[in-house]
Amino acid sequence: MEPIRKAYGYVTRINEDKPQVLVFQHSIPEAGIQIPKGTVKPEENTYNAVIREIEEETGLKNVDVEALLAQDYWESDDGTIHQRFFYKINVSDVPNEWNYQPTGGGDEEGLTFRFFWISSQEDVVLVRGHGDYLNRIFT
Picture 1: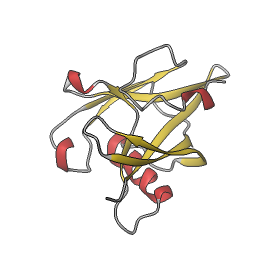
Picture 2: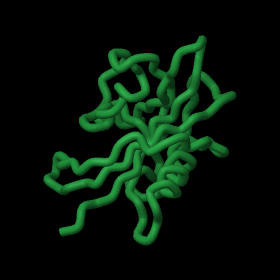
Picture 3: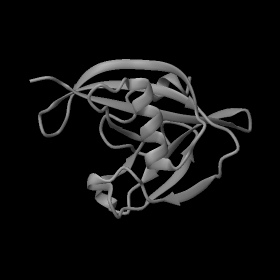
């Protein structure tokens, strides 16, 4: 079986000369705190997928994709294998926090995400797999 391709976005900004990463909490608390990510569509490249996912999940447009930070293979909780692509994405002039209803449809239909910024890996506990490469942002 082919791995499921997933594009992850570490959306970053500089605040008081220090990097911050955007995270969100679902309106379903047991979903945990996450970073924006999603499935890469067939025939879509991962660069375009991460831009699409950021817009669908956060409402942010005109993001600057700086770099592909990491690529790996990872086993999800249900046993499926994901090929993951983690991107560093820069933004500026964004709020400190906001709520957004994702536009990608599917399982996210009707949900509200509460977005906020973290300044270190220790600020929150992210769901399994989402913080695997935060050390490349918070050096």
